[in-house]
Amino acid sequence: MKKGTKSSTSTSQIVRDFAASNPTLKASEIIKELTAQGHKVYPALVSQALRGSADGKKPGKKRGRKPGTKNKVVAAAKTAKSAKAANTDTTFGNLKAAADFIRSSGSAESALQAIRDYQKIAALING
Image (cartoon, rainbow, N blue to C red; front, side, top):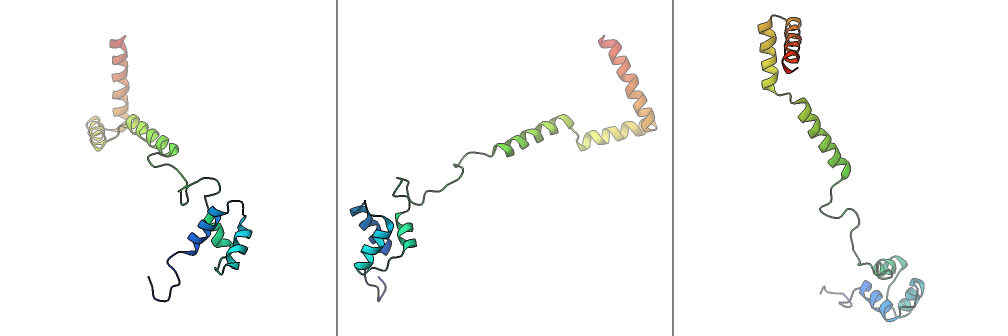
């Protein structure tokens, strides 16, 4: 305990103990009673000390999303991104192969014509 302190009991604990022994008193009445007993109490201290006790909640309970839950918007965006990546399937190897094909065809137009011809032949074979 520090030198010069009056007691080991905190003011908040005094307020909580007094409120527990007098559950019908309101905050303003608690302030009046404890001030009359010689304690330095003010409305904010009483409010903070009694927070959560009136409605049965635990003091200091955190609010917000529970641990382990994920944001649905982020999860949907990741799913859409992976679906898009699966559809495009553009890799460096594919780009290099396409460039080699265009180079061997002579131009982009002749490469496109070769692809159209291939599609016609495939349609005839597959029926």
